[in-house]
Image 1 (cartoon, rainbow, N blue to C red):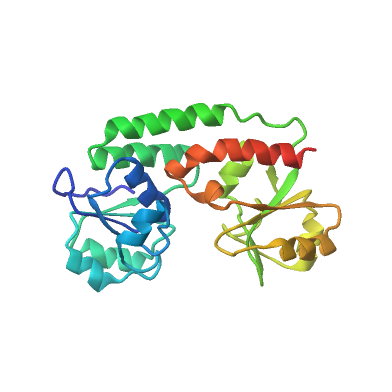
Image 2 (cartoon, rainbow, N blue to C red):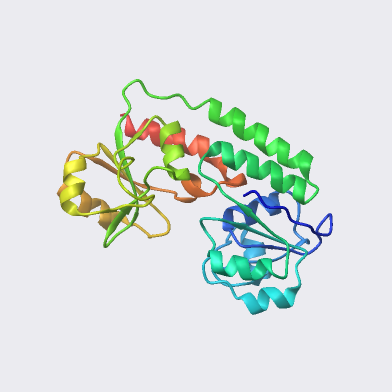
Length: 256
């Protein structure tokens, strides 16, 4: 993000403010150094259960964070609130990522590896991800797709989002890529007008269920509506190592 930070290297007291980056830090081997995380940092389960929780990504417990006296705080521009981050920056070194696509994610992984003196492991993860995503084959007849993240109102992943980049890499055409806003709201009328061939219902942040498939099928009876693992579309850390295999299985289901 164009800022410089000064901190004790390597950091021994790290706080992570974003679930995908928290999981990455554990996969880099920082079980002891990572002293606190958000309530949404659920992977790995044993660390979620044992580590200090410092609130949600957008509702951080600033007093608790300050009392822990971290050497380094790691966050993300989209997932954390600017005002809270700027308050933390007054007292602590805060490193922020800004991720819109796979290229940004790979850069983040390498940079975090450098920040925490785990460069070799970070480069290994990036090499595996690069190799994995190169095996995704784009279909000759890409389908029009809508990726929903919320209900009442319907909200979709639009352009300039990491999810949109994942859809493109699967060879899907995002029907709301020209809509205003990164997560545009959609009415039932506009949903019918957009007429997607495939509708993907994310498991997060809204917990879509089977009943929502029927609701959407009543509006678009010809569309294929699928529940999908939102973590594998939106977590831009080491969880991406599970994404390509999942995408391939999903693509085979879409194109039958």
